[in-house]
Image (cartoon, rainbow, N blue to C red; front, side, top):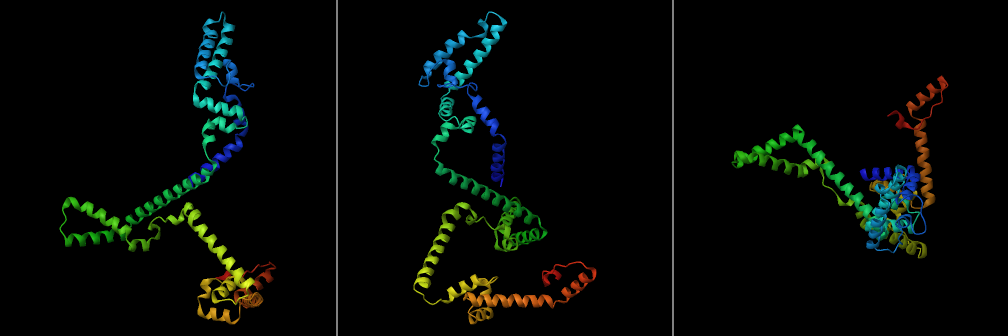
Length: 338
């Protein structure tokens, strides 16, 4: 959950700070003006293929030449100070290997504003985009796991504070102390052991399902690697089998296929509904797997529901009251009066 909020905040920040990011990126390296070789290289008077030793010598020469202390008057000293700062900034960029790589990447890709701002351009070139989705999934699964462990621990503390649980611990503690003598210094350890055993027992977990352990099946990675591929294979194989057997070969439907069609054609009928033997017999006798007969059955059910609604006494009372007060009443069904 915290990860999702973080991503949302990042998206909002990107939307509202886009213009600022452009200006920051352009002024990040030695000012907004940029020539063919790059502003930092032009300030030091070196080319992009200059080595570190050449850049260092050039910086020393220019820093001595434009040092503010060598200026003859105050006005010249201000100009020299600005020039000296410009030279120092250019050297700070080009003397550091990581910053220089990021600066070169920015010169070759001037539209990569955000990469230039965060300074991750050299790293981003080495990252395979195919690794990004798995890493995001792992981070989300980590958040799910931490949240589940925290929730279980929270419910454990709640259960351990209840009087019923305390009484159960006391009974078990007294029972064990009667069977075997326990030293005074070991009683605290024994009580802690009993608490942990009871919290892990099926007796307590049955009364409080929230205490059941973390299931790996709730992880997104498990669903992506196991659940979804298996479900896809089952769905494709079922559709392929159905097409071959019943569309091409025109074979007769079996009980399993008839149940599938009944659930598909008739609204509000599920596999649990068909477990009722009486309803299942009625559905098979009326051949509800046939779409036309399923439509007839649905129309009959709607008519029965409408008649039951009209014959409901509470509905009649509300209708008379609405007519008397000349207020329209929208009646949905008998469940409105339960």
